[in-house]
Amino acid sequence: MSVVPTPAAAVSAPAPCSPQDVRRVACIGAGVIGGGWAAHFLARGYDVTAWDPAPDAAARLRRLIAAAWPALEQLGLAKGASRDRLTVAAALEEAVADAQFVQESAPEKLDLKRDLLARLDAATPAGTVIASSTSGYPMTDMQTQAADPGRLVVGHPFNPPYLIPLVEVVGGELTAPAAVDWASRFYDAAGKSVITMDREVPGFIANRLQEALWREALHMVANGEATVAEIDASITEGPGLRWAVMGPMLTFALAGGEGGMAHMLDHFGPSLKSPWTRLDAPELDRALYDAVVAGCEDAAGGRSIADLVAERDRGVIDVLRATGRLPGSAEGAAR
Ligand SMILES: NC(=O)C1=CN([C@@H]2O[C@H](COP(=O)(O)OP(=O)(O)OC[C@H]3O[C@@H](n4cnc5c(N)ncnc54)[C@H](O)[C@@H]3O)[C@@H](O)[C@H]2O)C=CC1
Ligand SMILES: C[N+](C)(C)CC(=O)CC(=O)[O-]
Image 1: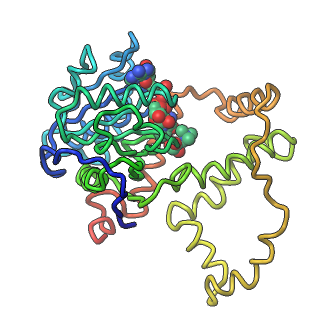
Image 2: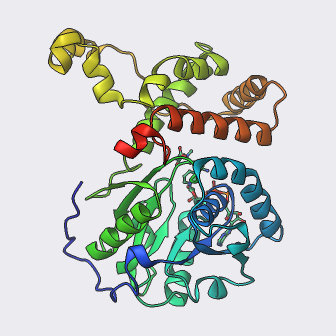
């Protein structure tokens, strides 16, 4: 997608360095996603400074990075990459004082994000781009309190950021187009697969799609139409296998045989009107909550979260390898 200027964009100072020359990254908020970003940037050879106000955050972060490191070694570490290049700062200001890029991954609460992004803007060197990992807030709603909103962008990752390549980049009404462009080029240099959106869309692209699937899954659990295990198997044994190779559009084009998408639409298009979906969100009442949590515990079958993380990481690496997306694989080299 191309980046188009937004008329109301604030004028930010030029970024202090080119995206390819970044060496120091600050990760603000060091939970599941901030920790995953820190692991990714360390593996790519960056110096990483993290800050998180929780008293146990440093220990949690080091545990997360240690658990991710075997997968990252399999993916291939950048020259000079080391876990020793992580610093955990005692204060937000210290974490961003020398940062050439900032990735914010604090809890998904709008007031918290507004306040935090304003604090980061005040403490970060002029021009340095600041990205939020938000799963769905438009940057327009989050940049309201910052003195220089022009350098604030969304950089939406997928869990875990050290394995799933995609990051969705989009600015808000007051974001300078140059900041969106700079962030996209930085993520690209940092080994991510980037989609740069030219407008704000609720849920960006992938979460909008995932949420549709997730709502339907919750309706089915709530109505007793499918168990948690059946829902998961319906994807991992079915469409999920194809989606790692081709997205839903090309996958369905093949459903039309030699006639491709045109025949697929002629043949199955009328079924779009069938009442298959119930896209309004179901009530997340106690019964549904308990059914989903218990179903996931059953599905885990005694495996701990750490076991599942390791299993997922091994599986995703196998998929990346099998589809030629690992550096060094024959097909990967040709891409
Ligand atoms: N968990 C997921 O699958 C994904 C989450 N995201 C987004 O990433 C962001 C972080 O989510 P998670 O890592 O899942 O949450 P989390 O709860 O695992 O981590 C949040 C961290 O932020 C810290 N924190 C609390 N107040 C803070 C503050 N004022 N400033 C800085 N840090 C603070 C907490 O101590 C915690 O360590 C959210 O915006 C979320 O929407 C994006 C993609 C996927
Ligand atoms: C569940 N979630 C909305 C936080 C998920 C994401 O934002 C992306 C992902 O990792 O699937």
